[in-house]
Each structure stands twice: as C-alpha cells, then as structure tokens.
Length: 530
Image: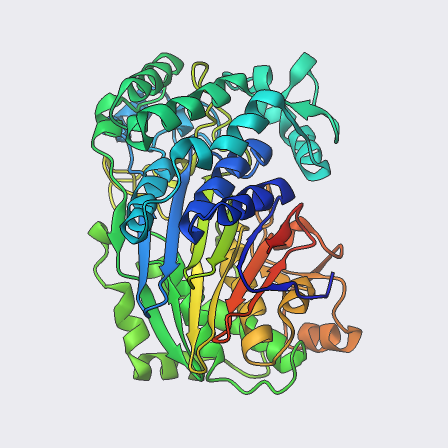
C-alpha cells in the first residue's frame, strides 16, 4: 500500500475500515471533524474491542483553522479506595494486570467525547448523539465480523482472560476463541450506547448509567465506586509544542509521554542525517529516543506530582542542544531500560472547514483488565495496573492520582501552511513510530502513505513480553542493519508488517484545501474520503 489517497471535502483514517466509514458518513451528513471522530471512536469500541473501548481513557488534539491548537485530557484517576492498604489487604505485592483489582481508575473516554462535542457545537449546532452512535449501536446489536488480528490476539490471550469476570460470555462464545469471520455481538453494549444517546454522555458519570456501572464494579471487586465516577471531568489543557526547521510540532501534556515524542523530533532536527532510512537516520532516531525516554522516565507522570513542567525543556534551546550533543553519531548508548506496554487506537479526521483532529483512546493492555461489566457490556481498562505499590516516587499509587500514559496524539503546523495530524497505537513504540512517519514525510519528502508503510523499528518492549532489544522489521537494507550492529545496537529482526510496530495513520491538509491521508497496512484500517 503506497498510493496516498487525496480528496477535498473531508477525510477520516482509523485502524478499522468500518469505523473509518462511520466517521466519513458523519462528514457526509454535515458533521464536523470532531463529530466524525466521536462516531469513529464509538464504532471502534465495538468492532475493535481488543484495542479500545468506552471503558478506557482518551486524549484529543484539535487544530482549528484560525491557528489555535487545543487538547483534551480524558484520563481517569485512581479510585479513592485504591491505596496501598487496599492492595495489602488483598494480598498483593503489585497491582494485578488483569481482573477487578486492575480496574482501579475511572474510564475517561466518554467524558472526552462530551467536551469535544461542546467545542464542536460552539461552531455549529451539529448532529445528535443518536446519529453519532448509530453505527456503533448497529454493530453491537446486529454483529460485526471478527478480524484475523482480533481472532489471533483473543486466542493468544485466552489463557489469562478466560477466567476474568464477564469475558468468556462476550468474547469466548461456546468457551473457545473465535475465528476470523465469526460474528461478534454485544447486546449489553448496544443497550448502553442507546442509553448514552438518550440520556447524554454525562450519564456515564452522573446518572442512572453511572449507578449501574458503579454497582457492577463493586460487586466484581473493583475499588471504584460511584463517587469516583461523579467527580470525574475531562479537562481542556494547552498542548505542548516545540519548533523545528519549517514546522511547529504539538503534542499532549503529562500524564502522557507527549514530551518524549516532541523531544525525539527536536533532537533529531539537530542531527546530520542526509539519507532517509540510512544508518545516520536510523541510528540518530534511536539515540534521540534514548535521550527522550530518559527524560520522560525521570520527570513525567501526573502533572500534579511533577516538579518540572514538561514545556520547560522544550523551550530551553540550550538544554536541547546539550542533549543532542550527548548523542554519539557512531556508537549506540547502553540501553538496559524498563519500558511501557499498551494497546490503543489512533484516529484522525479533517473536515471541509479545515478542522483537523488527532485522537487516541485505549484500554491499556489488549482487552484492558478483561473485566466485562454485565449490565453494560463495557470492557474496563487496566491503566491503573501501571501504578507502583510504593510510598512515593514515580507513578506511585495514590487515590485520585492519574497514571502515566503512553497515549499521545500528535499534530504539526508547517511554515508553508500545511496542517498535519498523526499518531499510532503501540505503547512504548508510539513516539518512535510518530518520529518515523513524521520525519520521512516532513524532512525527506517521502509521500504520506509510503512514510506509513515503510519499515519501522521499536526500541524496548513488544506486546506481552519484556525486552530491551532494538526490534526492526526485516525490510531495511542489509548494509544498514550491519552498520547498526557494528555501532553496538542489540538487534532483533521481526516479520515484515508486524502489528508489533503499531497501527499508524496521518492526515495532511494543504492550504489549497487538498487533504491527503494514510492508513497502516499493519492494521485492518482504511482512509475514507469524499
């Protein structure tokens, strides 16, 4: 897949073709890019449940045609009962990755939809919730074919999820993993989406639906309660930004790793690398990633607990220069380093009025905690399983604290008037894939779809395993791989087009009104345009 789709009236990209089409149909009906993304996100929660759902968190980056860029933090905080004593009483030395004890943070996704739609309705009256959730309701009620990737992942994770409350009934019909092409139904989720359409999105946190969610969570053994839902609100926040040659880049502030994504690109902008995908390019981006991740892992978490504002390092040109000078152009720095996991979806939309949206939502691990709430059909996230059961320090568990997030939607405004939104799923790989896609397109002029399709790499963790090697798709030139090995990189080949490298996407709006889009052949997605 190398040809870049182009259109003039609107475009949506996501990792599932049915979700992209749901978003495009909203644009066709006169909806905004924001409304299209809500429809896409709701559909993804049904057709791509191993990657996302309304029981997770989300972050939005909206680029307005007047030059403003705004973000929404729809991340839920730890339950008020989720403290060290709660887990000690449960006999836990660490927070479990699966099950009710992992479902310990509020799901913020729906609150993000709500705030984003407020912004949209300030521009124009907009479409009703019944229309925006229409396709998601249909697929949950009438069924959706399971993808090959979804079937394979469910089979691989069946052993650790089969005993989690509610999972078997929805995702393991007949007690066995489904095959590609089998039809998945979730009648309870269809009913929940209808309730949200009728009662309003805020009912997820304050209303009859919230009471049902809280009661199910309580009965299953989660520390979350109704008060946690009642006190949650999405937050509008200023984006992080940094200037590089020819563009200003934007990303999400903590508790996300958006600062790391921006640091990689700011550092690479200071390095010499004449040939895309040559040694200087590959080595330079990997070493910039190490510098950025060291900063991230030292400083980034819930902003209420941070001692240094993330924007400060991005504004400090001398600090960035010093970090770039610490990169040896020929030798790999040591990298025995912990890394972060995650399963996520990124989606983007551009409408005819020039509104561009970059949005990412996640339940953290594949299927999150695995807990499916019986009355709502919602899979609850396990983002709070990343908390450390420690008295203090980085990402230590505290009631009301937001967990560190790998999610980070990206955008750029070019000096020549282009606007770009881009992103990917992939946990630790998100900043690295963003860097690959952006630099190929923006610095080297690689066509947008080719920039997404080209071979990628991941320094650190792959799904379900802990590893610090540099994984690479086995499509790089052999001489470049030989140079990387000679420089001291610990290399591990991966199959071509492996989903380990994320499901990326990008949209570019040109001053002429031309829209270009790209989707990832590693996913089940497509660009939908008109």
